[in-house]
Image: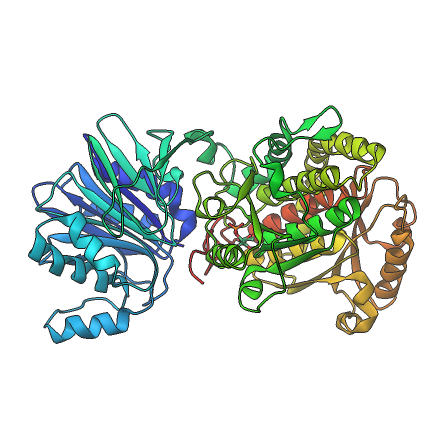
Length: 611
Ligand code: M6R
């Protein structure tokens, strides 16, 4: 939540900041602003999406300089208006500060400043930090030291960037539980919430740890901890380039990212399937050795990927797997120990609920493993091990290709645990490795045959409610499909385990109610297909309009469904990966048919970096 960018170097900083904010806008789009230092500090900020700031800069150009900070906001304290937009000024307009996070003790700090006669313009918690830094700067004359003194007084989560007119060519940043990375250039340096902020200029980055401050000038980068001790930040190279974070010719980032789902799976598998076995060379094998329980944590789509993973890991490794929402796990005193592997799933690697749960898991003695799509992110840095998904940057707020990559990584993990504890036969292992390798091509087939879904979405544009039913691994797919419809099309959508139907949800069925049903393969060894086809008959008898997502050639379902979306024949554990794609496409098309912003749905932000 909130995107942050900082720049020092020879370029005109306004263009660098606006470019960075454009690539970070998915983190928040309630308002945006930049502050630039030429001889003096100048600032522009506007409520609304970045385009409003661009328009303002067009009609009221800023005096450009070579040092600046920029911010795109997801509002927490104070309405999303011009005044509450960042940056916030202090020291008579000579100091500008931007903030991502929540300063929990801001009221008490504000009272202290008000008593000293400080005037506040905004309702934000962030403006408090600006005035505190200004006060310390007047006293010590050093921006880094001023910020260092302030951070020790702040409670909560924050990334702060600050510039001062009297310290040109300097940007100072600090972080606690909110993201910040450094971009290294030639004669220029960058700061950003993530590498997308500066990917146009450099792929060389440094990760900053918790409770650290960074000071950048065009030729230097200095990192210290909150006690003032020097720290050596960890270098990493970004594996994707600027074009990966651009829309290209696509109508939306979401459309582009759905088209990349096969590649996301292929890239996540790359180099990890070797001679019919799984090799996770980036993982210390000791992490998996002797574990007797797995707890998967995540939020939203990541949690649904975890639910799919549970079925597979239990089937292969024969150890119990629980899946919990991170925020529930963190606050309920779970029974875990040093043989419990807590697996966090997060595209961004910055979701605050998941980060807090990972830290908690470490504190109570669990082993922690992160499944993450973002290099340099906080959650993998706080974990004992990481399996990176290689979905590439995901910009649309709705998660799509990351879900596929997360399921893939969980499957790799499940097979690796099963190899380690010996509970999987060589045949099952080899079959699964073969089937996983075939998945990207099967996903391509699903995407290539998706025109019918677009037509269906058009005739359903006025639909107010959609129900989704699934069983076994189809159940989390139903939940994922419902989440996409809520967040993109703003309709009531609910996923149910099909077996639960007669325990209540069937009362919702009335004539014309649209129900998507994810139908297990008729070849499923548990014969779940027949049970789900019975469910279809039950709801059809009560007037439901049934759209079945079923295996190609499943003749049993045809007489009872109003529409059938076919998916290729696959291993039952691969089916959820194939069945979710039409639901991603449907949600996108329904939102488009309703004229809604597919990439930036209302009230949301891509990374939820506050609890
Ligand atoms: O970055 P993360 O994977 O930790 O994000 C978790 C959720 O916030 C995220 O999946 C969210 O539910 C998506 N907007 C769903 O499309």
